[in-house]
Image (cartoon, rainbow, N blue to C red; front, side, top):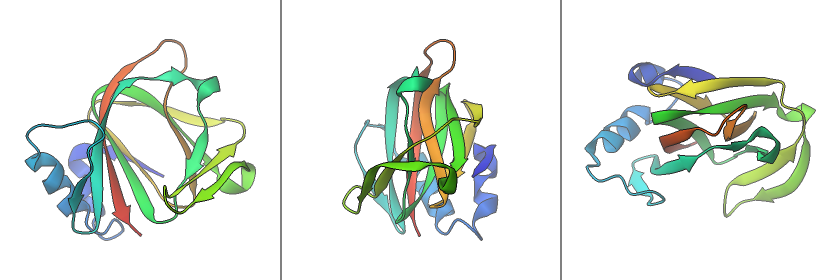
Amino acid sequence: MIIERIDRLANYQPILPNIEKALAAMQAIEERKAGVHYPFEGGYLFFQTGTTKPLAESQFEAHRKYIDVQIVLEGSEYAALEDLSNLSVAIPYSGERDVEKYEGGTQHFMKITEGMAYVCFPWDGHKAVFHIDQPLEFTKAVIKLEV
């Protein structure tokens, strides 16, 4: 997992193919509609807005076809990371949805605030959109970069 400021993401182009195209596509969208997939060469992106859920209601997941780049545009959320070898499969992999869900303890987490981003590779078990004490409001872009 990489945790970084949004304005530095383009520096990762050598290990995140098409991140520059994704960021340009994101900036070009004037009306950000939640849930709509916006394609670009090498992947797609979409926007989410809402309220975080309690940590106990969150679940680890991982992807195989895409690298997940999650950018907090407004508000904040918590994100967690765990090595897949320390997790057990809760819901087997779905190729159609490119997701496998996992169960396990949450040991490593960080508050991600406006202007920050985190990158989850296929080997990163991650949780997103949760809170520790009080619910948080957020708006974010999720970029899916083809592996």
